[in-house]
Image (tube, rainbow, N blue to C red; front, side, top):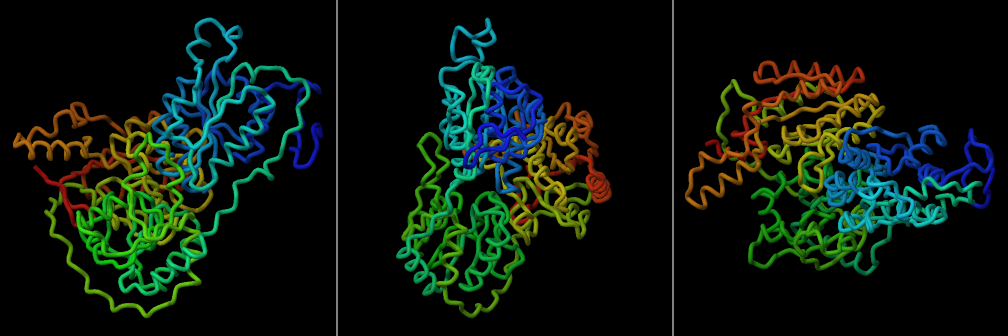
Length: 593
């Protein structure tokens, strides 16, 4: 090993083909990416970072990090997002100058709203005008490239010397991985990448620049919170953005059992509490159900574990009436916002604010709560009657049932679920059983996030499955090429209603409010005439495509074939044509008109 630049915490140098003293600015950048421990960098190639690309290949040997070639910049960032949702730590993504960054913006916004650490690197044409090539370097250079995404990243930087690169990369990693987590962006000047620097400078090791240990809650506020929960007769725990840690999961269960508290969960944030537990409350979709809102109205103490839109949920429960229960808020989300995006949601009331990550709050509260005897089990309430579907159609609910049957006893991670599935459409018993939504509420990121999550799950023994809508899949279908190319086993099930159906419902609502024809709601929404052949599009990426499946009698058999493909190391997509006009898992149903 080359020992140039030794010192306390210095990086060990790899053996290089270069002559001594023959190094470039991008070599420093590549070595720092390795130093912060990024296992992969997903990228779509671009001339603005050709120097860095060369260093990753010819200096680092395309290992630690390994490049993952993507067919679109949005896929690259979405893959990094999906990976971090499973792994709990970031991988990298690299995008080409300002034009690639523009492509990536939706995926960056998703990671921001989902509070997920993504380390994003970009590049700009030479900042020094006299070093720009005619035409192309000019349109690929921006005076302030970070301004494109500054309102939905935690931090961005453009180091203006090779010597400034190590600190910039170290700070980016520290910022992204410090709670509340989120995406960061570092832009490298192409001229700095291609600058010959001779000997490598002394580079700092990352060990002394890690994210700080999680803060502890204020002792007085913690005692007040425990006292409030101990005297509560009807406590409720709202499980929102929590980690995928098994230990933290077990502590949440212990706290709920000690308090005999009703627990409400949010499918947008993934598995947070076992659905089969006696304390699991009424299910929810993207919004709390009427039954869940009734639980909130009657609660005398509410512990919110970083619930997404707590203020909105409480207002929906109580309207203009005063909330009866006292609210304990465990969240660091207030530290993240700058006012451009309203993803901070409605301002919630909080009688006690524990300004710590929710997992930390639960661990601190556990020793202070007094275990109580469980309440008598409530009689189960009958579900709202829903229209019975004809035997010859597949509904969102029957798709869920068929998928459960096909999976059997396999350990599975459901990476994504469709909007039509309510909170109890899928039983969860482990923090990795379901990963939740994309954060930003757009479409197109599902396939890329599925690939990233499957990458993090590879070798875990878990079957990775994403149930996506047809619009989401069509926007992001080429992300599957990356999964096939890098042998990342993955199963995509497309709940295909040949429509941007959520917006059909909005048009239905508008027509009714304005006393206009509801029959026209499909216009400008239906994906038909022709219907895209999604299975063929998947085959075009090298995946195995099945379908379209229209016959319920064929569904389980086809899903089992797809599972066999994935278990053999392949990528499978099953196009399932669903009729959206029937019941969701919560008993509510769409209007079928």
